[in-house]
Image 1: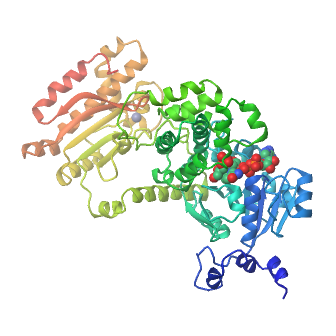
Image 2: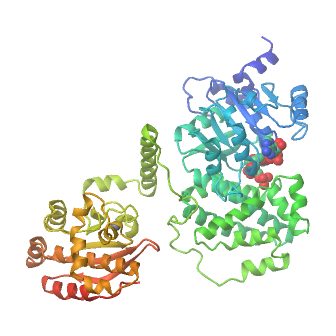
Image 3: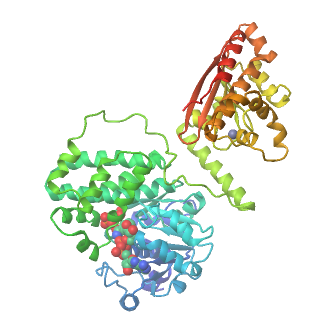
Length: 609
Ligand SMILES: NC(=O)C1=CN([C@@H]2O[C@H](COP(=O)(O)OP(=O)(O)OC[C@H]3O[C@@H](n4cnc5c(N)ncnc54)[C@H](O)[C@@H]3O)[C@@H](O)[C@H]2O)C=CC1
Ligand SMILES: O=C(CO)COP(=O)(O)O
Ligand SMILES: [Zn+2]
């Protein structure tokens, strides 16, 4: 057979022809499954967007032997590609592989595609997908390559993309240090593909990896998106430093401190810290901060030399410009001070001029290099809106997926975590709290599993006939030997407010009877309080005091104290609006303290603030 013909039709031979001879030998081996050089059944791949990166992705897909349908909205470009096998606008010096066929129809491009690789700028991607979703097969894996945060709704790109698709489309993000030109040249490169469902990422990895294009997989779609997007404004800043002639010391310091800001924001938004040290984070930051091919970096140089932002954006895709604005917004939402992002954005917007750049970044209060505790994700972060749990089987899958993500994250922090935990439980705290979903004991105490023994019921009551609660207390005191029993109420408690109201709710009215009694016992005091919130807050605190009182009067506690067991009973109240627990100064360590503390609580006229 003619070798030219073979090249056209056999993916294997086509791949062989680009590699050094030594590598050829292993390729056909049956023991190489999982290697980038393993034989892969060719599939149809749609590449949407015929710019720089689209062209590179089409070529990579074709190198791996796939049939590529290459969409461009520009009919003359489509014609030129199909006639000449060159993209006249991008990398015209490279011949495109014959299995790349261009089309100006999204429907034609996507029909029967296994992967749909989207290579259009971030700000245009959600609307584009919303318009064309009916042409995209429901089981095709979307591979998003755009690196930007979405300005219109100030979100990670995954959010408007999921909204645009309006269904459970397999979704992956491909990111990492990969200049399109270098990919065209076959320069060995490594990237990462992330998906919440690892198997989607692995499928993309298998279908597209070659020995020149090594794809790692990840489940951290937050970290991978943030790294890929946020390195863009940081690269603009690097260009500004370059264009100002500040030198390599400055640039190295800038990139190092930038990576810390990246890490802070990533962690606050629920990404994994190690993702930022990976290809989509530091990898791409280094490439674009130091590499002269970067359009973001070039934009920084041009801005500092006095060119107008609008003029630069008119001819080039510079993702860092809109992304900088969203980055500053995210930082604000998460309560983070990120001076580099802020300054770069101010420079882009023209609020700061070149002469002030050094002063703003260098003349800040001196501090230690690392601030210890930025390891918490932020409850206000824009990535923490409500999670909508689907109905039926989808809901089950969704929840079980979330559980796996959590278990993986715990194992990443400590590989032996579950093994140690499974062996024994030795909590030192018994928590008696309200069933309210917003008051989870471990989270608000920042304690991991295994540290808190928990009993929850509506309005955190301890009632002497409630065998459930008494069993918990007995087990905690007698066998677990807890050191602290905490009764924690919460302001705004629906249970207490229901007891205060005249309305009927059902069986729960019986459960809340003793709170109504508590109110009646102190009715005179409550009548004097005009403000209904204050009334509710005070009753909530008294209800905590009553539960503490009832615990202390059980034989369980009294016997424990008689036997010299050191155990304190506390009364606390949590405020939903600020996440802070108020200590009601109830701390009882022996039976003789009970009455005085309870009296003080019943005489109290105003709640804690
Ligand atoms: N160029 C590179 O080296 C790399 C780029 N990326 C990312 O890939 C994305 C695309 O970048 P490039 O291809 O480099 O940009 P580009 O400017 O070279 O090409 C963008 C393409 O998208 C098309 N397009 C724009 N708006 C569209 C719309 N509404 N509908 C249909 N097509 C539309 C344009 O016609 C153009 O063909 C960006 O988010 C970029 O950050 C990622 C890795 C490397
Ligand atoms: O993301 C890129 C390479 O990984 C391309 O960067 P620029 O958009 O700055 O050219
Ligand atoms: Zn409650």
